Image (tube, rainbow, N blue to C red):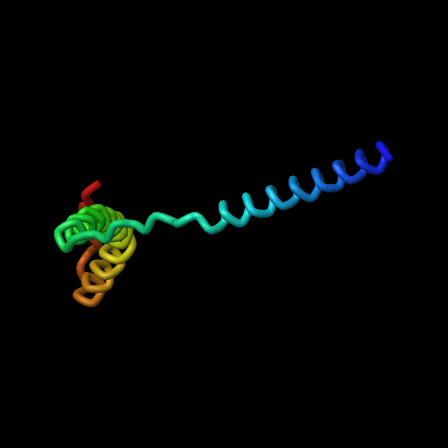
Length: 97
């Protein structure tokens, strides 16, 4: 008889722990998430302006680098072809570094 009581208590304890674990996981998954606060127009404008300022500097630097690279290649060829068309001696073109 004592053995049956121990088995009953053991089984009811297992069920209680299982129930407790399931309800805890359900409650934890249903917790309310905090929604982000929407930005004001001024905050959005400040973010856009700061991003655009950085991008403009990057694009300007890339454009200058591309210009210097292309000047080395294209200006001398064009100048030589113009001078050749005029039958004049070739001239060295100074390039900024």
